[in-house]
Amino acid sequence: MSVIRSWRPSWRPPRALVRALMAAFALVLVGAVATALAGQDWSVVSVMLAGSDGGRIGLLLAGALLISMVGLGFGYLAWRAVLFELGPPVSEPRVARVFFVTFLSKYVPGKVPGLIAATKVATANGVGFGRLMSTAALSMSLVLLTGLTIGLLAGVHMLGTQVVWLVAAATVLVVVVLVRPQLVNHGAHLLLRLLRRPDPTRSASARGIRLAVVSQAVSWTVTGLHLWLLAVAMGADPVRSLGLCVGAFTLATTVGMLTVVLPDGIGVREAVLTAALTVVLPAPAAAVVAVASRLVSTVGEVALGAAALAVAEVAIRRAPAAPAEPEPERVTEQATEPATEAGAAAAPAGDK
Image 1 (tube, rainbow, N blue to C red):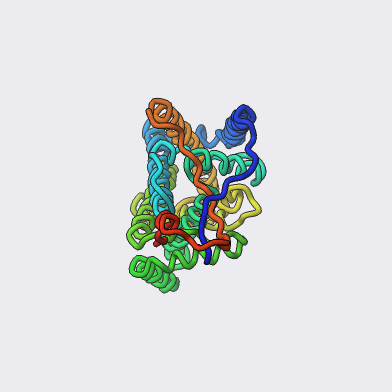
Image 2 (image 1 turned 90 degrees about the horizontal axis):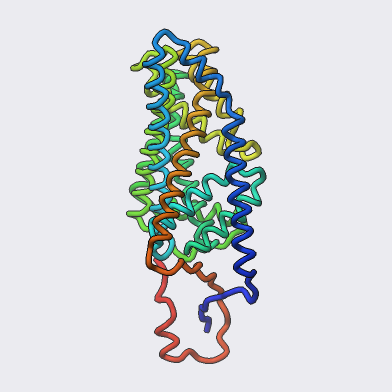
């Protein structure tokens, strides 16, 4: 008979060492973000403001930045919905801390340091490594599913009605997922096996998956509106360019995410955006909008992430509760003695 018990490492690093390492990572993260901002092509702002109506263009730029931040907020809600499905509750400030530290870690050079630091932050805030990886796998499945579906809108504008069947097929796929949400769990389990990670101990409920799908679809749609405002600022027709810009941004970002060898899909995303925007803009103007989109997205991510982390830090420090304990990893052992009634009662009743 097998029993499940909590596993804890036999050795833990001193708290002072952990704090020193986390402080060092915070400095590295701030430096990486600052480097990312400094590396952006800020000249596109002056190019856009050089238009005939600088005040109007300035308002469009500010609106694009705000919309980009709102879209990321919906993406956070989608990730949060998945996280809550895969484990016990975690306080809102700690959820925000885990998400935005993990999200901003993409600016740290190399994948391993950011992953290690994000994992440490997660475990220190009540989210175990297994739960973090399961959330990432399930969220990525939803991001790709909704991203490719909405992104096909750009294909209709670029290639004409002959690709309408692709949009219909993708829409049917989303509907199937909404009707049979457990298919997403199967996809996430397959992804974890390909990555040689263990299956999650819990599966997301149908309601949680539906909520995450809707939130992620709204995130893509809202975020894509920032590209539309930038294109309008450069002279694109507002009506003709609306669907194209939302679809183009979603498709370009999704393709960039699949290009794992390039950090944040840099280069690939701009190439796809420029090609799509030439439908409504001259090529030079389309290139300016593509570069401006990267700048707006980066500034929006950093601004929202910094604000959210600052608010979360204040809320956590003011909270009377003790710091969150990391989730224990579970291991299965072969019992050497029959389980007592008390032991059987203490064992988990089972997962969803």
